[in-house]
Length: 239
Image (cartoon, rainbow, N blue to C red; front, side):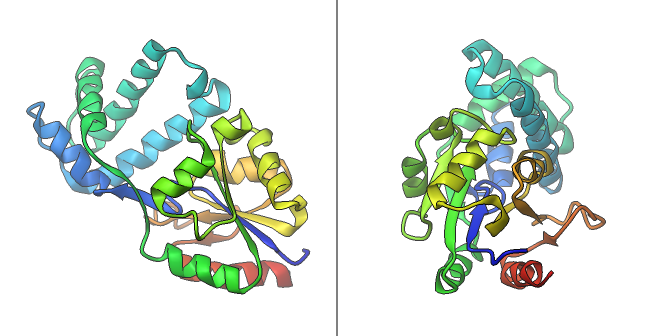
């Protein structure tokens, strides 16, 4: 493999997480509807719900839905999370909880291991980009999450007119980096949206499994923390 001079990242679940934590957000919203959640099940609920979202974006992206269709989708999305938290509710109740979740004040913040790792990548001379299925301009997302000074660009589905795993958003990232696929690697936590999407345009992919849901994953490089990234990149370059 060529020298890897560009490293692309997924945003949510890879570089950034909810702030306050998703367990707190969900538990607070559920209580307002008379539901008590087992917070230990919420990460698994988000994993399944995010896989559901990735499958949806692969066929009929959320950005193309009508408001009513989006509401129905997120009611089902929330229903998955609640079920893993021990609350098996109907779709209408799940939709009401989702509206309460949306009404809370929360944002995205980098994981503690991210900024030091981005600094290490910069020192190595590599370009850094982010590819995200968010429906707002990439510059706005980077500023809101506190990444503007740490990455070279952030491409969203709004910027590219396409969602992961479809090729245009990855090709836009390659164009912004002025790189070809063979000298690029993507790090992401969604097997369908990130890993399959990147490989679909020839980009090598590293699976980020922060919660350790896939210990037996054998589809390629897998890391569970950012301090494992540079050794993994160097190993790919030696291969």
